Image 1 (cartoon, helix red, strand yellow):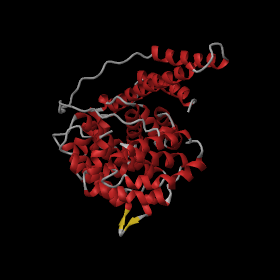
Image 2 (cartoon, helix red, strand yellow):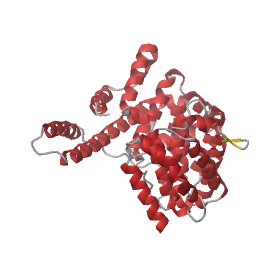
Image 3 (cartoon, helix red, strand yellow):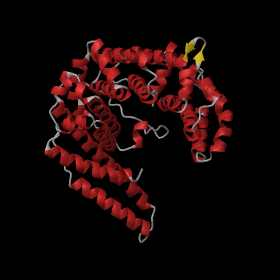
Image 4 (tube, helix red, strand yellow):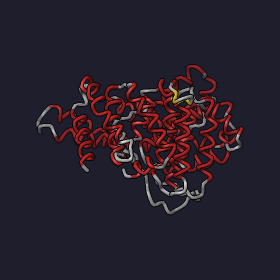
Length: 92
Length: 309
């Protein structure tokens, strides 16, 4: 529950500063560990919202950083090997 | 999640094509993941996973221009597998059929060639064209207008016989789609302008301008009454327990949104007239006088809408 509120708060902050591209670039490495955590069984319930945060950064900065790319194969592997990721989509 | 993947394709295009995970190209891994999603989700009617998987395939077709020629057969196989599944809901079937349109936008000759080689041309197009009246969202209208425009204008003289034979009906359906698209876009614009007006003072100049815009949009809607819906002529599974609607996709912009879809059709016709006048004359002969009048009206309204973009 606490993590969920944290991710929601981060999303609100990102939305509030979305016009400040430089700040978004600086925030990406800060929130990245949290996003990685959502790929583990413990954090999976917040994966969707964490992805929304990364989507916002990617869309507003119009760039996919190397850090962001490192996330992508993990997402695919989770999707390919188990159905766990799909249950996350279903929660929307 | 869906928008994240779509933006990886849209903004990180080169990475998707060049990067590898171990020995495996990231794009191959991506397609395999999507096939896996469809395998897992296919037995559950109305399951959202299948919708997202098909949306991602469509985004690939939209974003990876000329880069999917080698794997287009996979898209056809997925299309046929899903359409052959009697358990899927009618909403999902409509969603899958949209892939036909994206394949046409990607490459008409290659799509037709692959359909012919796999012997699925007739069932796919029969399903596709007989379902057009069932769509109801702007994104769907937009995609279908683009797809059908590509199909009927790319190589008009050499279209498959079954398409040629149905051309007047196809044109009629295309105009209906453009009309519905325009009506929905006008409604969307009216809502947007009304929202903006609530924040403006009563006697401001901006408010007067917005009022003029509203009047013009509403007048267009009044002069264009709704048409009667066509009969449902397909044998769909009726127990559609979950109707999937897209998220706002606020953080993903489709390439197809750059221009109002009917204006894309107008531009294609213009370039056809200049570059292939004989094809243009043959094509335009399919239009009845009534259709031309409706089309002119739609184009005018879309030009007005495009001015806001």
